[in-house]
Amino acid sequence: MVNRRGFLALTGAVAAAGMAGCGPGGGGPLVRLASGEVGGFYHAFAGLLSAVAAKSGNVRIERVTTSGSQENLTMLAQGQVDAALALSDSVGDTTDRMLALGRVYENYLQLVVRSDSPIAGVADLRGARVNLGADGSGAALTGDRLLRVAGMDPQEDVVISHRPLRDAVAALNSGASDALLWAGGVPTTVLEVPSRMRLVDMGEWAVPMRERFGPVYDRVEIPADAYPGGSAVHTIGVANLMLAAASMSQDIAAAIVELLVYQADSLVPTEAAGTQFLDGRSLIGTAPVPLHPGAIEVYRRWHG
Image (cartoon, rainbow, N blue to C red; front, side, top):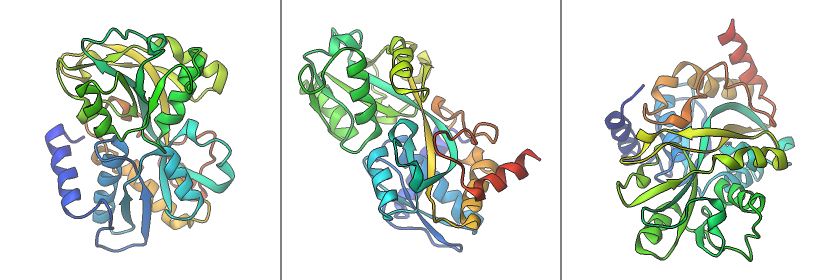
């Protein structure tokens, strides 16, 4: 597992190599992977995956910067990319157009307020100005569901905005916004501002979310040491899936999954509590999307 310094150095090197918009050199077929926002875990994970793919020589991965899950799914369905990262609750009724390569890790829903905010729970968001994830992000969908489960109409009871993450953090710090909702790994670097922001506990809403929208939601804990000066809170976890176009060949799918299984230590920063699923035993749990035949081949070989 790489440490934070190594992770930042590697992602910085990837960015310097132009990974945000163009694929690396090397052999193998090119796969365009829809990732997420700069500063988020999708984007960083895709950069690491691209780097290890370049070393393998069996496949090249081009990281495509996006706003998140919903945009990624649209791009995959329209053939603009070959693979995508997405929250499992964002998949909806698109499962007939894609196959899964693996369940790569758990996303943590994070409700962030200023340290002096009176907001102590989801119910306190009534009448507040809330950034509900960027347009096209998975947080926008999950956040809408969360507000409805908590008895609020997002269009009437909350003042909603959809800023990209960095803009949302700036708006929160300046007082232009009261809260932001983010779905990502832990820690998310741009949220690591000691004494200025804090996380709101949302653990009580995991069961109601499961009861209303299905078993894609889990009650998870963000540990106290995840952010400087933070306290442990419970929140809602959503599995992240790595998806592929149904037309992807078995050989290419297998080459990608081999990286997930055999190069896992190079794909996850040590501090990321939300990445525990990068393991051959849990990578196969991709419901509601069936596994790609090429992925099945690798997982069978790995299990022996």
